Amino acid sequence: MNWTGRCAAVVLTSIAPVTALAADPEPTPVQRWTFDQDTLHQPPPGFEFGFTGRGRPGTWVVEDQNGVPSAPNALVQSEGDAGRAMTRFALAGSKKYADVRVRVRCKPLHGGTEKGCGVIVHWQSDSQYVLARASALKHEVVLFVQSGEIRRELGRKKASVAAGRWLTLAVEAKGETLTVRLDGKVVLSVKDGMARGNGRFGVATEADAHSMFDDLEVWDAK
Image (cartoon, rainbow, N blue to C red):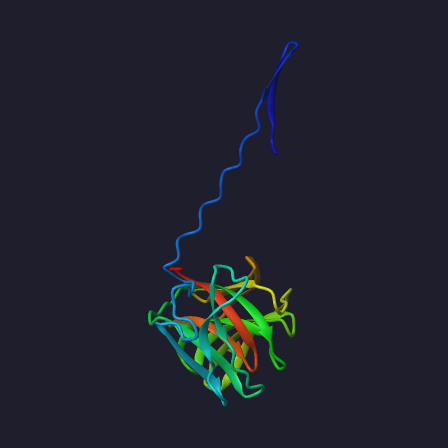
């Protein structure tokens, strides 16, 4: 805190501390999903579901859960097929973005092969997208590009990710730069020309991970 003062002869005049300027407010998201008005025990309307790999598709339904960030509902993925289905995803809407920021609150519940949650951007098909995954099993955040049957890792960072605790995971794709934030802090930032694209976005789980999602938000980052 800065103070300024002025002294003349024996008189000292103090000026009150300068109040820090308020930070610029965060832009309003283009769209936000809280799942609170959706029918319980059913998939949320406007979402499309799929998976990459071999195995059963995910089971994505809206559930009334205690302690969700915006009560009372959350989106829950409860299908577990260890080691078979590589990625299960829920795509929000049909709009495609080249430059985009996606943020979600998610809570890893349990799983033996994987225990975590993810965000997908630049989804063009079941085998073409960018995925950021926060793993409570390995305590890390990993960024991938899926292209056909090949998954290419762009970055990996140890991080504080715990099962049974809500976290905030965000991915921004702008030009050739991909930035991943965990609980508001940048954990990965990479530049990759092959990761550019114009696609949809959503949330994801992997292998046998059971997870909850709430407050999914999207911004146009162009």
